[in-house]
Amino acid sequence: MTSIFETLFALGVASKEHQEIYADRTRDREGVKVFRDSQSGVIYIDGFYGGNDVYEDGGYREANLKVSGSRDFETTRDAARRSKTYQAFVSGKHIVDFGCGDGAFLQSVRYDTASCCGIELQRDYVAALNDDGIACHTELSAVADGSLDTAVSFHVLEHLPDPLPILRDIHRVLKPGGTVVVEVPHANDFLLSQVHSDAFKSFTLWSQHLVLHTRDSLNRLLQAAGFEGVVIEGVQRYPLSNHMTWLASQKPGGHKSALSALDTPELTGAYEAALNRIDATDTLVAIARNPV
Image 1 (cartoon, rainbow, N blue to C red):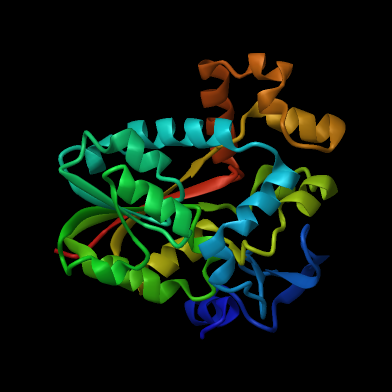
Image 2: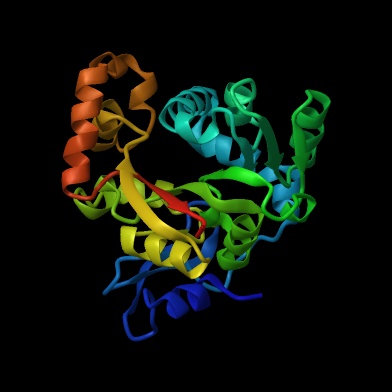
């Protein structure tokens, strides 16, 4: 299996010459080194992958909740944002959600699409979605060539030690001119690149996240998979209240505290725009198309 370093090296965004140790452990594992390419800014883990089993039984989600707290609020908010923002790519379309998790996004758009299905490894999620009438498979091989208009994948690519074959398989199932929408965490996150918060760094570096992309590395990855017309924008999933709590208390959760009263739509939009100006949002979104 190709390692994430080998993929990044082939893309021209990582090399041994520019490799520096960014952290000597992740929040959940001692001895798992995290590297940063001093030239490209990409952050990555080389030589470690927990294996598919951890994703099939879902144990990693439970372990993560002990550190990050309940994800119900974030899951609901993200599904609402995505269903609104990407409406043009799903309404009346045949779509797949690669790495769909519990299906929150699919549930939010299922009645707007011409058809929808999910790809997911976690066995209980697959069973629950199929029981609920949303087709869910464990592999993209279940999807016919050129059968779909849109593929979405939210915070999944960073978990894959060899993402290029998966993106090429997504390319395969899309019609000519079809759209792929990808969200990944951003290596230039404000709390890492500008504030240099050690507490946030210790929290966010996780052995399941094998790479934190830059705009350039994400663009190169999608082009290498055969997509064209790549457009990348920054999205801020966690608002000002969350950043204030990291700065004041060195912990997450401000967006679920009394400080959340600060997060009016106007302020949240302005803060996201300001972070975009300095390329320091916490998330990158790429939208690209299959060649016609």
